[in-house]
Image (cartoon, rainbow, N blue to C red; front, top):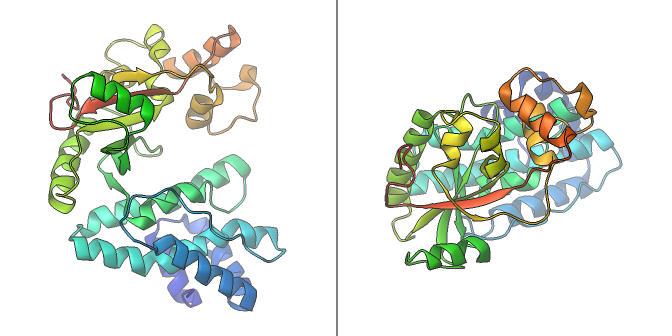
Amino acid sequence: MLPEPDELAGALLDLAVPHEDIDTAVRLGRRVTDDPRALACLERSVALLVQDMGEVRAPVDLPAYPGSCEATARHFPLYVFAAALPHVRAYHRELGVPEEISRHTLADVGRGVAKHRRRHGTGGLLKPRWLHLHFHGELYQLGRLQFQRTRLGSWTGDAVAAAGLPAGPGDPALGVHVPDFLGPLTPEACDRSVALARAFFARHFPREPYAVATCGSWLLDPQLKRYLPPDSHIVRFQERFRLSHLPEEPDDMAPVRYVFGTTDVLLDRLPRRTRLERALVDHLRDGGHWYVGHGWFAWKGMGGDSNG
């Protein structure tokens, strides 16, 4: 199941794994190929990952690496995704997904490796469970944004139904995600992504009637408008969505983790170079909290445009 060392290096390169991490990943891969238990675990993991390819489902719990080497355990999800790569590529080809979109989508693996090193200072893969969506045909990178084939939850579904749209809890929807390390979140880039997504899903998933696009993110916390100017990229992004729910429980570290790459530094030691950095830090220092807002816009209407 696991490619030979030279092929493994090529697969990791295709997945945008940073060059500095490839040699170590290939070297540690021998611990997997030389261990029958690890190989069996790898085979089970790939089978679970690609089962019912393309169906919208909850992420599955893959078996843990059975060995005792901590470094190999950190890299083990990389080997699962490298072994699953031919399966998801075949699915993309069957759908007619352009190679560029397939490549950009699966490059999120490399982003996860970069984030792991940024946060922990070691090689590995941060949040491999998130990448199950990419390797199961449920999420696609289309320009600046990512779009996930999903279903409406109760909060947003009830809000959508109350607004008179022909959808409610359990109906198909597209979840919007904002990856980091991909440039500014300009209105023009978001407009282009929404346009690309509307064409992409109409062509490749014509039997899924999406009524709305949804987003759950700290970027939708309305308090940000108190600190940022009306023409800021974040405020313009917020204005695409109708807020459906703001939870009672705060998630103070969500924006800190995204913007600063860590939650292990005291607030007083975090940089305050930009208006956003100052807003995040000062709000918390003054006793405030940040929340993950949930919102939506009509998929076939004008809500996804920057002027909508």
